[in-house]
Image (cartoon, rainbow, N blue to C red; front, side, top):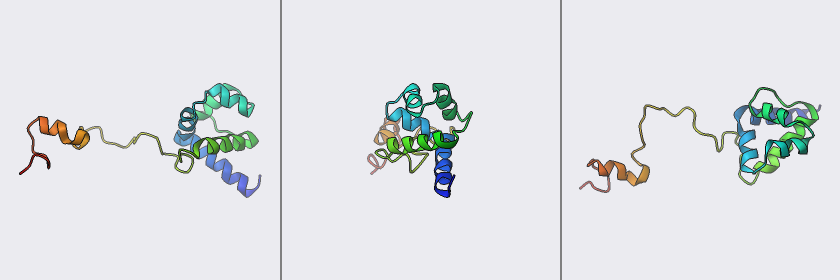
Length: 118
């Protein structure tokens, strides 16, 4: 493999490891079986890649990367592997965001909001 192909291989493995590969496939409305048929591999292979149980290798990995890039370009996901992924570092103890619903939840409880202050 040449340097360009190694960069492509690294990129597809990043997409797989981050979970973005699955997000891209699902957002494109494709099943595991459809992607597998297109790549000439088993459905189980694609499933294992998406679960990060295995890594795609060789020319199939390069083809998978090209497919993911083509599917993701309209959504911009291929450039940012975390786009569309939930923020896993968000604190669970922070409670609900008072700015949601324009502060209506806080206002209902009688608390002062910028809209009700003054």
